[in-house]
Length: 385
Image (cartoon, rainbow, N blue to C red; front, side, top):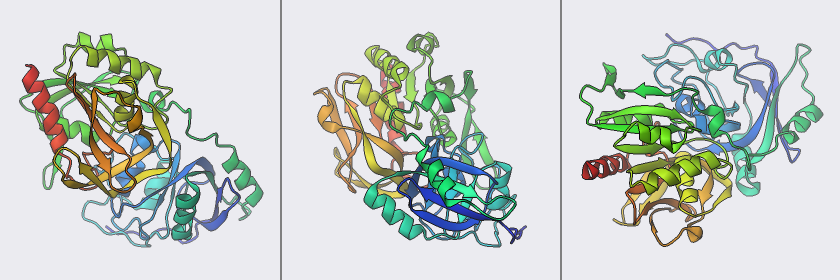
């Protein structure tokens, strides 16, 4: 049932490290938050975005103006909690309405202790981030006296050290291994259950989204999910049919444990599939380099070309680092490229059964044009068996 968002929400400030101040109102938890401010151009899927571990330490600006129309529910989450450091939106409608809704966006944000701000000019903010690049920022909610100090907000923004050099994969990863057999969602039945597993896949959790695991399970894969810092020997001891390298936040270069494990499993001719941070880890394990992007790719409308077929695919993206294609050795064949900026979106090893993709091909939320990459992984495992 629809509900009204409380009218008397306190004033809030958004401050950027360059000194820019936006004044709006709080639509989330009290207090303050700091992080890298990025913008996401997706029209739908705010709940999936908030719970994507790849947004750890990032404050997300949603460029679509009306956020919260359909409320929130316990099914549309990509992890066990909200990982985004904060949320910035233009407008949260007073009334939400959807047959699946359990609570409003504001209620959800407050329950999850997420600081958020609304009623600011997100178009102006997006232009700043596009022109100057992603910036450190802070959201400061007014105290009981109704005031919020602009100088304090700017100081908070400037206290954030930036994403470069941050190893966040081990921060968001699970502490203990677990099994996964849940399959994709269907209207009227919810999520399914894997009945007849055909393959056993070991997934390294650098911040994995649940729908990635569901899409693998829907293709007959029983999954054992390992912590990010698990060594290759632990994965290989389970005698898997394939290895999956998950998405995740932060800078890939400090993840020496993941780079070493990936290099070892690929050397064993193990079918290996990497997504997002997993793509970057595979690039580093193959001898390449990564670089920090100006403002990254965050959205569900990014055109990518498959260089092997020539097809143009609309994709979901969430990353702030990229693999430098010029740094990859000759045994890495480029397979996908962004049509926005020409950055590398995918490559495959010509000497080993390993490939990777930069975007989020499970597209939760977003288009499903790249579902065939999961089929390609299954094919590699079939050929090996």
